[in-house]
Image (cartoon, rainbow, N blue to C red; front, top):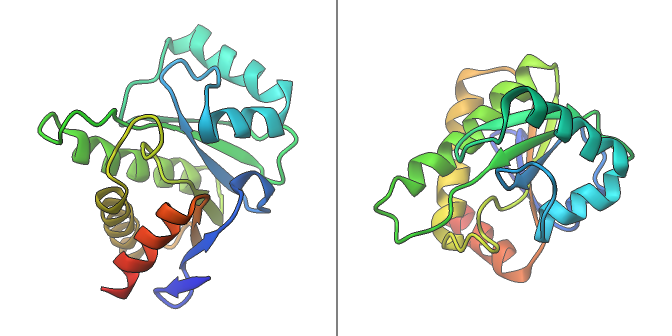
Length: 177
């Protein structure tokens, strides 16, 4: 595990669905109804209550746009909340993808703080089927979270959970720079 900012920001390799934290961030798609990768894994681990909560949000507001996030109870996960952040699909980087990805992290942290979550775990948003370059995404995530933590007391701890060796290597490289 890597640590920065006096232990407020951590990186570890593992399965985000197995973590005991106040909030788990889901790399959601705009439908909020589950998908592949981390989205599907979180929905499976959380059980049917998560899908029901997401369906209620869809009934109220429709889909969730890239760069935005919504919060639900966590179902059977060892967390209080799941924050569903919809990352951008990588289209070369000149269509606002970096700003949308940073917005996912900011909005997730805003929701966590507003709901009293002291610990938050993030996956590598947009780095799977959305094809965001992993190193670039790790730089954006680290910088955005670090900026947030400098200015806000909550959450007390932010954990980047790296599922693959590629993501783990990218975060190690960003943190070693």
